[in-house]
Amino acid sequence: MISVSPRPAAFLDRDGVVNHDDGYIGTKERIRWTPNAAKAIRRLNEAGYLVFIFTNQSGVARGLFTEDQLNVLHDWMRAELLAQGARVDDIRYCPHHPNGTVAGYLNDHHWRKPAPGMILDLMECWPVRREGSFVIGDRASDIEAGKAAGLPGFLFSGGDLDTFVTELMSQMRAP
Picture 1 (spheres, helix red, strand yellow):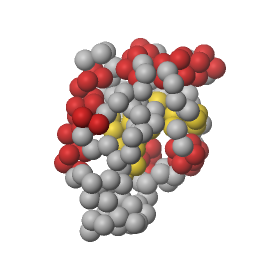
Picture 2 (cartoon, one colour):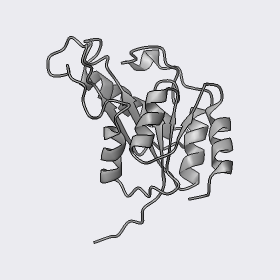
Picture 3 (cartoon, one colour):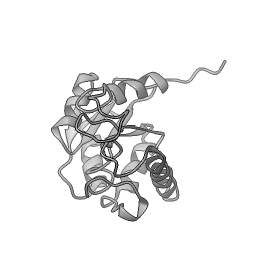
Picture 4 (spheres, one colour):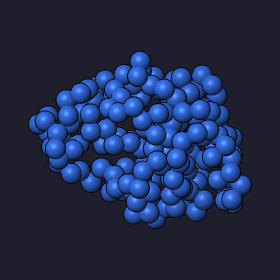
């Protein structure tokens, strides 16, 4: 059996961090990347971080797009980033919302931020070292999810993601 050493991880919110939050994005035609998102992710990769995206996607519960469409979008996003040398190791999303309209998704699921379910699931599936790991989000619910998982969170208010990540990494210990 091969032993994999735990590494710190960067947990990135999707809408508002990796791409602009244009509301209920379920197709690649609607994606507008945050400036230097790929460069920021590549910087994290090169520094030894696992990189994850975690995102509430209530558009599924609201009937705006399906989980299949969302998975196609996420596969496309990962491929587009990888073509620029930026690897997203895994993605978790929560399709549930208590005020939705699609049966089977009408609850306040334990993965829905501010609950930490998506982060905790990623930490169970990957060799994540808590020390040095962090969350970047654009909303208080992202930061609260990180805190509930025992991780520090940093609020991104827009602009150049690589500049934000560079400054954040200079404040933190290297992995």
